[in-house]
Every structure is written in structure tokens, then in C-alpha cells.
Length: 246
Image (cartoon, rainbow, N blue to C red; front, top):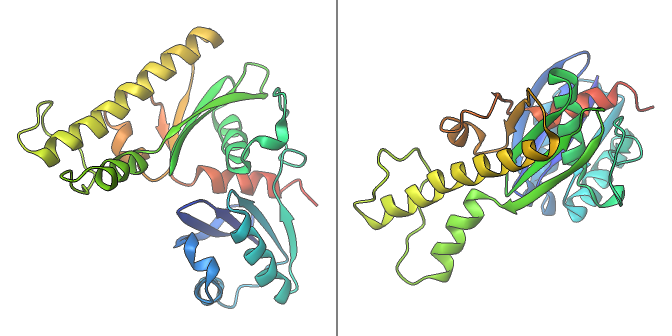
């Protein structure tokens, strides 16, 4: 059994895996700075014995905390990077690519082939593109949906913090509804426009576009270009990588 840790800016997604993902759970990444994360993981793991852990992290301080906690358990720790991710990279500086993006690319190529696109609706919204040769070839980064709505609330005197959901109209009848429409419909339009531009450059007859991340299910409902939603995409990429990394 192996332990997978996908450490993002907001959440840490943990999973136990053998041939397939046995179970998984999310925790707040901020809890790596306290003793709570160790307690959470002990409860999550229970009596399961695991021989190694594979970490995919975009938060350096949390990476250090995870390594320190795993060192106590005498577990072999592997950090996913461009050097061991198992996918060829056509990119000028591979070390600058987030390991979560490489894991996503690996998982999408495994399930959908190439070319393909991943749209990750996380704290930042990222696009990752796999070209027709099956290589990671680059991407796009934009502010995440929550980051945008939180910014509006924090930087303006009268705009409230909103609960994201699917708007029923295209014309708002209240401040909250107007913000909701701008956020959800606006992001859907942004995603559609970017997919179109990417495909203009790739020129693929068939281009699978797979969504993941916290707001994937909500936003994918109004984007017909999205082929599938895979909430555990990064973990699946880690699982695939863990099969070949010693």
C-alpha cells in the first residue's frame, strides 16, 4: 500500500492506493502548520500499513512539514517532479511546472490519449496541454473563481462575499445575483474562449478537455466543450506515477 499526498494551496488530498485508490479524503492545507494534520492522517490511515509516500505539492512549507511527519513514521518519501513524473516535457524550463499539473497531464493522457487538455478549477485556474505526441507542452494560468470573488469582496466596500452556485438568470436582480452571474457565466465564457484558442493552435479533430478541481462540477455544467469531470485527477496521476517510481 502507498500513501499519496496532493498538497494544494487550499486543500491537501490524501489517498491510500494499491492497484487502485483504496480511499481518499481532503484536509485544509493550513493544518500542516499545526499538529492537527498528523492527527487527521493517523485517523485516515488507521491500521493500514504503507511502505512509501509520494508527495505532489505546490506549498513548500507544507512539503517540509509532510516530510518531517513521514520521517517519524520511517516511510520512504518521494517528491513528484519533472524528473520522475513519467511524461515527456516539451517546455523551456520544466522545473517551473507545478507537479500537480504534471500529475494531471499524466492522468489525462492515460485515460483519454493525446492531444488533450486539463482545466483545473482550483485556487488558480490552470490549463495544461498534452500535444499529439503525448508530451506536456505548456499551459495557461488565470485567477481561480474563489480568488476573484473574494478579491471583489475584500477590495470593495459594498460587495458581499458570495456562495458560489449556478445562476438562474443572465441578468442580476440583486448585487449578489449580479456578482454570481459575472463569476460563473464569466468564467464559463473565459474557459470556452481559451479552449477555442488552444485548439486553433493544436488543430485537433477531437480534443478531450477534462475538468478537475473544486469548482469543476459547477462550471462544467455550462461548458459543452468539457468532455469529462474527474475530481480525483491529480491523485490518479500520482497513482500512475507511483507505479514506476522506485
